[in-house]
Amino acid sequence: MTWKTLGLIALALPITACGGGGGNDSVGNGPAAGNSDGGGSLETPVETDPVNPLQGRMGNLPHRTDATYDASTDTLTLDLRGAPVDLTRNNFLPNINGFDQFQAAGAEASALRGTTASGSGSAMIVFSRANAHDIHGVEYERLTPGGIPVTGTATYQGEYVGLITSTSAGAAFVVQGDATLETDFDSGSVNGRVSNRSQVVSGSDNGFFMNDLALRDGSISGNGEFQGTVTGGQAIGDTFFSGSSTTTGSYGGAIVGATGNEAVGGVVIDHEFEGVTMTETGAFVASQP
Image 1 (cartoon, helix red, strand yellow):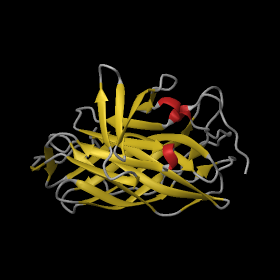
Image 2 (image 1 turned 135 degrees about the vertical axis):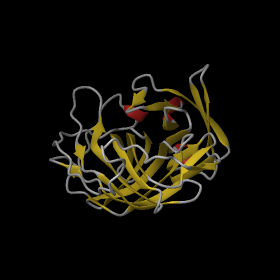
Image 3 (image 1 turned 180 degrees about the horizontal axis):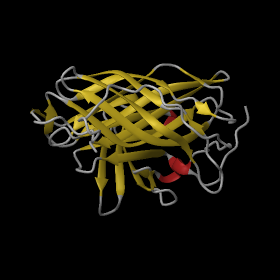
């Protein structure tokens, strides 16, 4: 396998960049959502049950990963395994598809964190290989009390970022895309997709494109958390990653917002290529259009 790296890149990691082919093969459409005019809003009237703040995590993430943001210093402090680490804004690439990027000195740890428009929820990717740790996971939070619709359907649309890493190959790169969730609160089901997926690169290099991730067979609990399975996501075109296969992964998250009008969550799925396992750890933030 041949790896081509860029100099200064996102997350201060060697991102593989090869020429890509265009297009996305959409997979995994969920149930039709929204009202008859296609607006995707909740059916009226909106009746909600109250829910409290919560925190969930996926992937290889310490049991308690607290994130505290200090606006006065633009610093994100992570508590990883009981050891606080200060991360500052990555000035080279401070924001990727709506997610703020933070980095510790010497690239000891990195984080990509997105919040909903109302500030009711957040989703964050954490990555660190410091002190012999292999930390790569997603934390999602409902930050304020809110409501969960008890009936009707809704569509949520927003942004996605993912970090694909391989310990054995020693490489990492970032992908971005559009997240869509389609929920049915009567049946407690949720499905969706991550579409328009492409590699994030710097300079004049062209990133490659990837097939949609299908978010399938999800169920919503009484407190507004949901989880399901993920398939798809293979690379498209003539890239080092073409011909990769995927195993079934998982996604999870929470409905947030005063009336359940926003959603946050994460994705974890493995891609297999020539005997190498590459793990995609992603996060999304979405709202009703």
